[in-house]
Image (cartoon, rainbow, N blue to C red; front, top):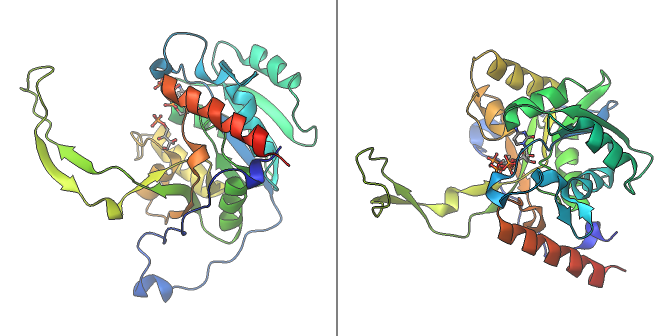
Length: 279
Ligand SMILES: Nc1ccn([C@@H]2O[C@H](COP(=O)(O)OP(=O)(O)OP(=O)(O)O)[C@@H](O)[C@H]2O)c(=O)n1
Ligand SMILES: C[C@](O)(CO)[C@H](O)COP(=O)(O)O
């Protein structure tokens, strides 16, 4: 596979949020070492926005299910030795059988557990399946099936260097407007613009998001008990609610989320490009 070299160059690293004089005076964070790195892959979504059919993770992408591509991307990362796949609740056995017959590296352990009603619950169920020796956890959407291994490696390296929560991200390229939420606006009526957000301050975040295991467990524990982070759309958002720092590393354009039908077309094109550029 050519994943580690495919795609366009990475943009300049995004600075850690909140970095400044006060933070630079803080004591250096000790690196983590010695434990095992695992990836939790939430794959239990229906894929409603993709349209009718099988659950999104089980749809075909270039001759293999979307999920197989995502698991392969995790397996190709240097440090990942365990992948916990969170399958659609009705089909863990079918997913287990599918992955057992897929051409994936035998050196990486793969465990399948049934998922929950939303992404957050599915991730929590995946975390519950991790063995004790895991100290660094990646959470990676099955729907971001084509993330290059180099992006995964850079997230892991930044967690191992001491960051409690690491997120790959890209600058926002569209101009972004904020709209008002007027409950009396008739359905279909044009939306009034409130203001234009300064996109220089915005980043579009991807996965895998990488975490010190204890920090992620605390964040999910809090959310499960209704103590904060319940509505967060990513795990890093839950860690932010704990008041712990979250830092960004460069994401990759091929780590886009397969969400709508056009995204599948793009994913097929990315695979085709990889085949033509593979050494
Ligand atoms: N109950 C859920 C819902 C989502 N996911 C996973 O979370 C990731 C990101 O979700 P998204 O791309 O929004 O997927 P869906 O929820 O399947 O999409 P849709 O909203 O279109 O149904 C996906 O890998 C999806 O399988 C999950 O594991 N469990
Ligand atoms: C986690 C995520 O991939 C970050 O961009 C994204 O939030 C998950 O998708 P969803 O549509 O918000 O469930």
